Image (cartoon, rainbow, N blue to C red; front, side, top):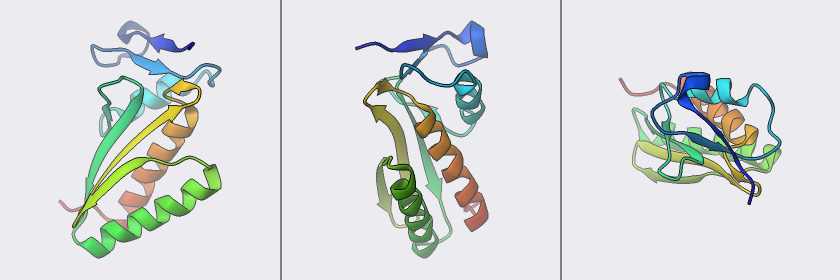
Length: 121
């Protein structure tokens, strides 16, 4: 299994390193770092996790439906759960193992759709 890591000194990341999938675009570390103000690095250091809280179950479900549609387009699917108005999402790539551009693109997509729907304040 071949993965690459990014050290904090090279992109101002948290104390732990992100483990990236091999053969990823050069801008992936910077795009991943930009997400870390809202997303958390998974315990494995190979994924991004975030909990979204909406004002209602209907809005949470709308968010999940929009993300599910994009998952079909991108052929990439999260680990996620829903409890009433909360949706917890984790993006990671299993082959090749590590954080990939698809994970970052889908995390960015989630942020965009959640913002459009409106998060609970």
